[in-house]
Image (tube, rainbow, N blue to C red; front, side):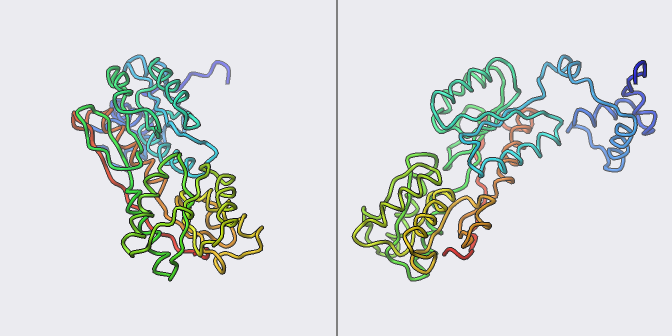
Length: 338
């Protein structure tokens, strides 16, 4: 209401029956101070009751920080990434940071443009999926003490630069997926692969699985396409027009797998009766399509959350001076398509 005095930290402290310093610790998510859950809850209740809103501008000036991080992704239309970003948001909320999202379309030009924007002091740190920028390209961010955590397709050897990495073993996960198809008595297994994202590592897993079972790799069963539903549809149609169609298909991601299932259906064939289909990513729609898609989950939300936690550990001085690399789990999700 006009003329009403804006509540202060002192007001919150008085209502919660704690010191003003304790209120400040909660507002700023000071990890160096242990605060009992009951005390934290009492302070948060008092803030809500009084309608207290922290003065973000003053906070930034005092700390010489933006209290903002960026989540950089290659394709906002790929359902894999919203869950990944949600995990980043979970951690950002807990640490009292804002999150901005940047889409690069997976191009070198837009990744460099993003880098230039971040160097203007807009964020304190970045959790990024970069297809083109390498560690040396990110050196300018490190010089400005901007934290960087990368979601990688494969393990990265931690370097001397304080750049952290988080990953799943795409080769091992893909090998497990194809071995599942082989153990279901499929021998003529195709792969829908791509030049984008982690597809090349997933193709390596495909090749390793076939070799482990002494199954010759038929180049005619490798079909290249865009990392999308349309790409999977086109790649599958090429396989169906071949002399001998596959009995099973492993797609580099779920979108390609769904495109393949459409092509199979339009050809008058059934999944999995005529052709079994295996995806990768376990996007939300994987269990909603018919038949529900057998796939590999990366636990996207957990990935994003842990990546952001690694970033805040570095921003808060709780990380080593050199880079870290953390492997995360995957799991085969068995449904009706294979």
